[in-house]
Length: 353
Image 1: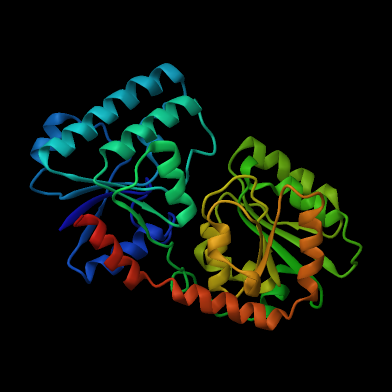
Image 2: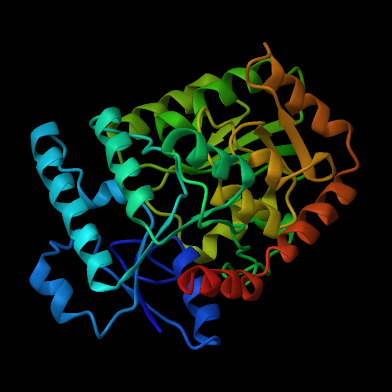
């Protein structure tokens, strides 16, 4: 069985893209399934679908808006109409079409209404859908009226993806961070929905002189560049290490230097950053939204109510009262349970549905 897998422009690679696809591809190989990187900018047509029918069994989508979003509404509408037409043709030709819903809607959107119509069409045309939690399954039922063929499959761990050989003291020394401070870490893209400003505001209210807030942010937009400069000026206890790309080998520096990872999302469904943190035995602080309450429990961090005033600030203070060794152990045990071998068998079931 072969699946054309539309994940990242850089393909199924560990170094240049989200490693989700690469790790799953590796696990699927053992089941006799080959995942082939698809070009999500690809201009499908009926001729292509006919010519490749014997080469691929499954067309597996991940972030649909990349297939139709041109940056302007008129162009996006035309391309979306064409894209849906090709998916319909693919089903008529016997392809399986699968969508893994990592996000309910794009975080940056040209038109929410167009995104809704696209998702409504995809959920009705798809052979099967994959979601990472029961909350997401409920969203599909409530908003797109699809109940059958919706599979809840967790997001797998990244324990074996990233190097993890540097000790806490070595990491802090290399990053020139205080040896004995309690370090909160934010890492990942600096984008509006990530809530970075809220984290800085909450941290600045903490009275602790021995606290450090470390940002290892991926900066590749004007918004990110501006915010990175503002963060450095916000509080002398804030340390910002902006970069357009964090090298694979360097991620361990930040995670092993940290005591806890704080991810103050404003809107999110699931989080690869949170799963990465768990794999490094790092407790996490996150809002109780989306799939996150199904990802962690009180033993491995704190879920706070973002609707409550000062909830994030209270969580930042409360985490220091926890037994961090126990939280770290619980985080790592849970990461280990997110087995890619088990996930691969579940994805195969989806492909055969």
